[in-house]
Length: 190
Image 1 (tube, rainbow, N blue to C red):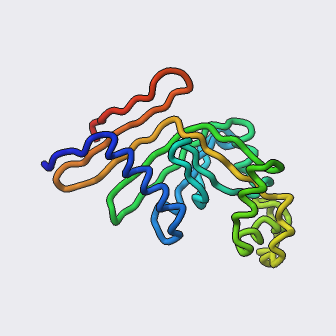
Image 2 (image 1 turned 90 degrees about the vertical axis):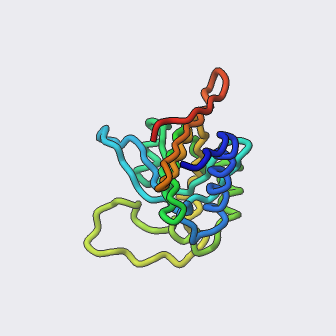
């Protein structure tokens, strides 16, 4: 079994993968799975696009239509988890934290300004996402019409678990940043 990297190296690698997921739309970490508590109390999971990551603040940014079920779920219970997996690198990240929602503030305005026109069009769909309809609606074409429905979702990271799968021995580590008390880092049995 090869020697394990130190925990700070592991955290730096994890943060590097998150940054790459933002910058490279072809990278496996660009489209993680977001899990929330559904309105019915069951877990609700869906793929999202990672739009921003600030390592020092331990904050990730996603975008959503403010009318989407996930926004209502997060408004009711701001706890959320993100799951990332890169099969090429055999690395899984599981993140957990609390979300803040931003629809009509400076955070939302900055996120909207940074978005590509094609991405903005998604928020102009009508009626609201998840509404039953007799046939798929036409794709919106106005890149500004969706601004009233746009919401930036910031996940403030409180826990990160890293797992590397390898024939020479799997490695797993957990990092926590509690609201009160010191941060912790520890190896876990994979």
